[in-house]
Length: 150
Image 1: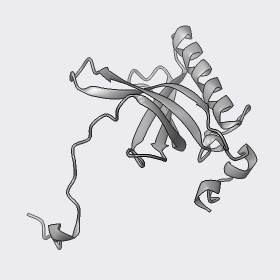
Image 2: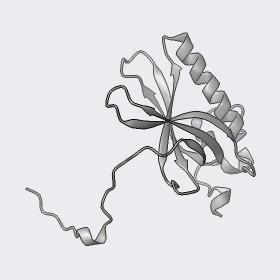
Image 3: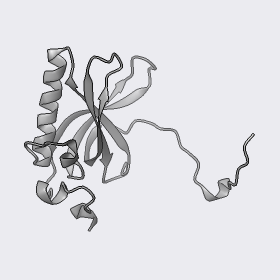
Image 4: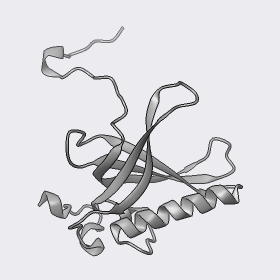
């Protein structure tokens, strides 16, 4: 048993987490982290992308790039995807993934059926520059306020 000091009248209830419709969305990379694969024989860069406009503003999506993997094909796909992300945000040679954060870009989102649960999930299929995107140097400084929030 746990003592609670909580009033449900003061908090909106949780809603079911469903995939957003397929389409193109304005977004930013809000977080990034290098993680070890389940098998332990590789690493992937996990990027958290946040939709910044429209009805799905605030929704999060994830991209997982197999940066280190025994499969050369997986690594090549990840490097190609990272190249597309770098071009979309205008940071061609990042030394740290934080340099990709908080720069507006457009993401192409698809819906697919998960093999394990049969549920519909989102998958990011492409990246492109967003018109009017801030210069990389202005938006890449950790802790700075993104230009569109000033």
